[in-house]
Length: 264
Picture 1 (cartoon, rainbow, N blue to C red):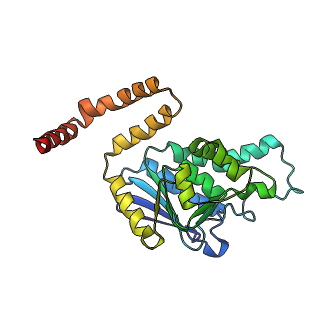
Picture 2 (picture 1 turned 90 degrees about the vertical axis):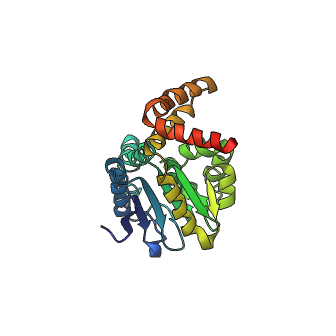
Picture 3 (picture 1 turned 90 degrees about the horizontal axis):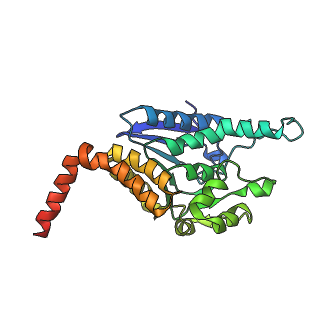
């Protein structure tokens, strides 16, 4: 395992820590491989319930390592066709982010500091984005004459809307943690001094919930996002019926009976 990204499994949670502070955690291929493996393990191993991605140092990540990636060849040496460039991005990043989005277990990013470029793109593919007060977000690709092409434009637009996506992708502006929460990108912002404790407490609450319900909810939410209200309710009914009538019937009845007792 590379020292640039550390992996440990604690209490059913796979933890990946970006650990390249001298390079501002610029993400190289070795670091991506550690995250890739963790996502594969999350998908395949029953003992893992969630993945937490965090980092050390004064940046969460400054983005992709421009000097250490096969995706960023020197323009004078790059004789690939446009379709070949898109193919290489798809192989290296798109499939990876798609798998993060599709795996039926929760993935959390704990962002304690500036998160730029591919860090924002990866954040768009995970389920929960938790930020400290010191975090900020930006897509500086426009400053080198390109767009954020691995979800920075597409996923960010879906999550936060057209106006905020233009702010980052066209204007090249950054947003702080509270603005990111207001825009819908970040779900929670915690004080710097208690950030790690708050993140771990959230992860513990997360893995205490029924895993099959979480898996179905992740799929159902993705479906409902693009459906009208009536069709969305059909998805809810289809997904929920097995839990209510069979899988979690005892739990449903126990909670309902407890509530009735409290009301009396």
